[in-house]
Amino acid sequence: MALLSIIVAPDHRLKAISQPIAVFDREARKLADDMLETMYDAPGIGLAAIQVGAARRLIVVDIARDPEPPSPYVLFNPRIVSAAAETVHFEEGCLSLPDQFAEVVRPGSIVITYQDLEGTPRRLEASGLLATCIQHEMDHLEGVLFVDHLSAVRRSIILRKLVKARRAEASA
Ligand code: ZN
Image (cartoon, rainbow, N blue to C red; front, side):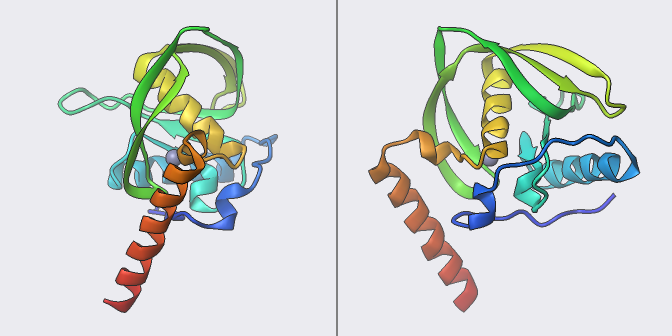
């Protein structure tokens, strides 16, 4: 396994539309393994392949907290088949927007289909934080960040902070 570097916004690569994965080979499994390792190391509770520069429809999620045992989800080609009308709002963060958080409103529960590491079609019902996290990661596959759900003013405040932080880091 290897740690991958995470792309930080604003970056045009995060706007890419990710492509479906058709072949479930060693390379696809290695990408999933490396993404999990990168997510745990960060640490974070979700990561989409585009955040490590791979425009593929793959997300990994694990919302277990210490001392719970790890409970990773590796979801290839996830698709939402239904979403509850009832909504919830969680304060979201993103490994591509370090130290930035905002409340986002999303459906409180979803049903998705996806393929597992072997390419076998599966179905998952998720609610609460897991549903939010999966929707957040799936947004990345369409080039959408959580700040895109906020007002233009709030979005630009957050993105400006990130640009400033990057400049400060570069000059340090
Ligand atoms: Zn994210």
